[in-house]
Amino acid sequence: MRTVIFDLDGTLADTSGDLLAAANACFRKMGLGDLLHLPQDAGVALRGGKSMLTAGLKRAGRYSEDLVEEYYPVLLEQYRDAIDHHTVMYPGAMEAVEQLKVDGFRVGICTNKPEALAEKLTRSLGVRDAFHSLVGADTLPVRKPDPEPLREAARRAGGDPERTILIGDTDTDRKTSAAAGVASVLVTFGPSGGDLEALRPEALLQRFEDLPALAARLLPL
Image (tube, rainbow, N blue to C red; front, side, top):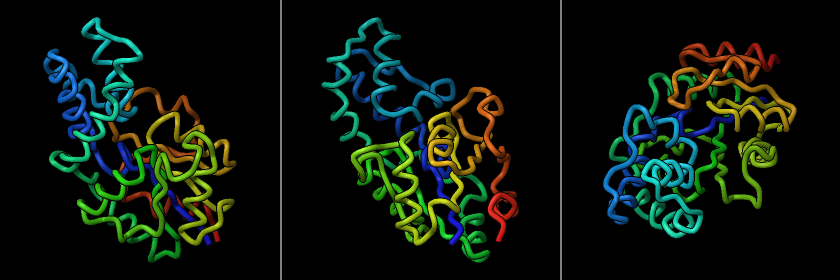
C-alpha cells in the first residue's frame, strides 16, 4: 500500500505562534520579558523547544545549557496548556489528505513533537481521525532524522515503508527520507526558511492542491 507521511509543525499546521508564546512565558518567568517574536522567529519555533530557549537566551546574553534544560519542562507545560490558541492548518491541507485517501493512499504523521502533544493538538484541531497513524518524538527510542520513525508511521498506517513519501519542511525531513531511501517533498509555504531547493528534495510543494497528483507521480501504481 502506498503511503504519504506528513511532518506536523510547519508542514500541516503553522504552530509557530503557540510555540513562541510558550517560550516567552518561560522568559517572563526568568524576568527577561518576551524575547522571540513573529514573524521573524517563526522558523526558530519550528526547530523545537530547546532551540527557542537557546535562541532567546543568547539574544539576552543569558545562555547556559543548564538554564535551557531547567526550563524545557516548563516550556512543554506552558505549551500543553495553550496548544491551540494561534495554530491553524495550512490552506488545502486536509482537502489534500482526503483526496489522497480517495486515491488509495494511506496517510500518517511523523513529527518531532512529543507524541502526547501531537495527539492533543491534532484532536483539538479536529483532524486526528483523518490520519491512519501518528508517530511522535518519543514514540520510539529514536526520532527524525533517524529513518525508523518514518518507517513505523508507514507501518502503523497499514502501508509499505518502501512505498512511502515524506512531506516536510526542513533539512531534518530531507535527511529522514534520504536515510529511509524514499522520496522527500518539501513545502515552500512554511516559516522554516532557508533554500529548500538546495536540499535537493525529489519535489517542492507550493500548494496542497497539487499534492495528490504529485504523490501519484512519485509513487505510481
